[in-house]
Image 1 (cartoon, rainbow, N blue to C red):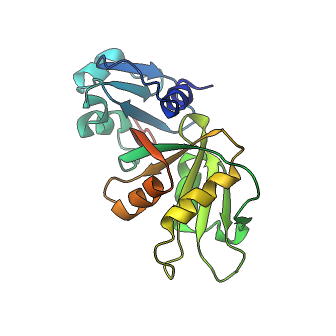
Image 2: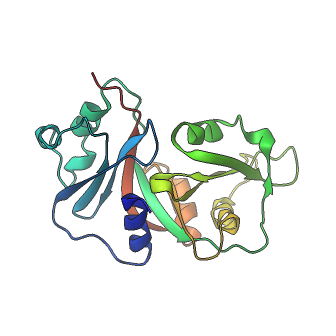
Image 3: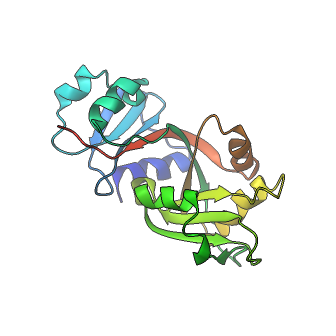
Length: 211
């Protein structure tokens, strides 16, 4: 298990890293994607071996917020693409009878395309009606853990929490699942919280282009 997956799995069970201000260096979990997972007073930085400890320190890297600082992230990404800073939420899969069906016709949805750019094994699900554009993505995401993304059909109101709960039927019972949500997307954040998801960290990803 990747160290970030291990940290998130422990956090899902209430076991967090020490509040020591440390930036823990780990290898990237996916080729071409780097990132930082920040927890309370401790961060895990997934970067290539060409990045030195001296560079991280010079860019202000520390476990008390510095590892997510714009200066450090921009410095490590170089001219590469940088994703938004997200809240990381965790939950447990529930398995059982899926409340969603495979929807390969939604692969071109912008949310699915974004998932493909930073995650692996992306599958798209939704409701049976072909004119319903509700989307749930399931993939191998942060640290290699199952990661879901959700977006309700804009014609439906107040269904976000139900959708965030339905996504858990796609994952075997008890398996830790993660989701990333922009802090400013209050509607989505309330939906995840309403479905029992728990915030444990922040994450920011980038495609490095150094030099």
